[in-house]
Image (tube, rainbow, N blue to C red; front, side, top):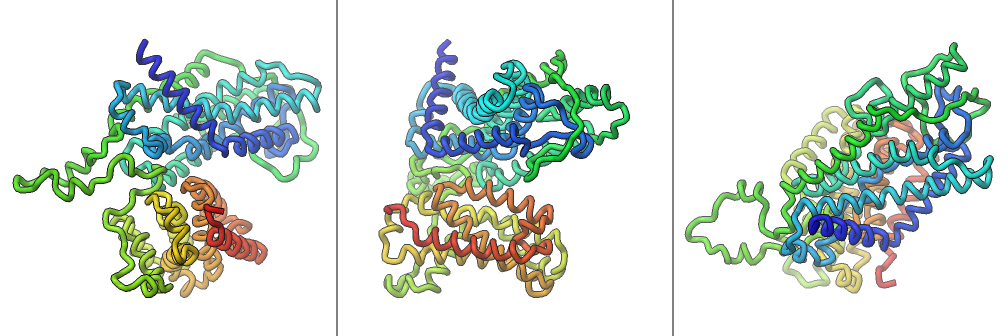
Length: 525
């Protein structure tokens, strides 16, 4: 009974902390707008290549809304709920948790429950807005079961799974930062799109079951219909024209379907419980994998010597797990006077040393390999796609390092705070140009220069606005996936597609505006 109370109080405290965030109202407003988009037909679900759709009853609209909410939670929910352990470090409650009698499994399960409920509240606002608008503009108040059934079958398991993966990534070494965010984004896109190509072991959104149910109802009225392997689902600027409609009263609940969806929730709980094994419980000492690499200290080494005294404590940890810890040997401006050390070139070199010092040797080795490959094969599009993703950990730190090092007030009141921000942007642009120099100079991909200026400006502005790299990671991964990886010319900033002049001009104006806002805006104002 004590463990249940500890779990419940942990979940409630985590949920209250999330709801107190001022960004929660903005996210809820966006969800309400998405619910309105479902009712107005901007978010559509059609079969046979936008030829057939179900009658706009509560079951059909509730299913479209549930699939929309589940898709958004799968792709973006991870970035909304991760960083929960880092928040306890920032709030200085980590020592209390470490010394409390609450077990690690109970603590993590409480955080998992709080994050799951938080995502369900966001998705629930979509369902509530749809029900209200359906009652105002439709035939009347819809039946609650028609909307709740797909919500419980789709959204609840997805919210539980996404929160569990976010906690597991934060507990595992090397996955709590930008690398983990990139890997999750790739995996989430693969998991969501895989059912469209055939049966898969894990259908996270249960799209195959809904497709089979809709197809059966459709063929009863239109036996001559030529249907594809999966329905068409997405956001469309213009609603479809005249579509052939068919009655569909919702998916039939079977024991197998309910068991598979409940098993996903249970598997998420098991994943969180298993994450308690690598969870260090906020222990400031090096983890076991670091101790194995470092070896045992020699007999003549004092364990309480300078190395031990320099070990960062839990209270000095990063406020966001996706940002690397400050380097143990910070970059120096030199031994000259301040007036000489703060000259543009020296400030740029200092920012460059600070940014590159935090990167691992594998990152440097990969960057050198990409630079060499770019000069050897300047017209290879795949190299550009990878090159625009490799510096993402460095860009993510541009606008948040002041917060991580707890020197933001000092930087804001320094002699040249704006010059420091310009230098940070210049370092990000220089790294980007070094990675794409071969395709630009030898391959003629001059449009990539727009991304060289735009991406670091976006990272700097997003970091200074949100004090966290998560905003930049979400926005940039979407732009990179659609514009660069899928070679969509309208959003291409990396020179992989023939971007129109309007796109290049828009990115140029955005780069100038974001850089000006990041440099001129002060936290004290």
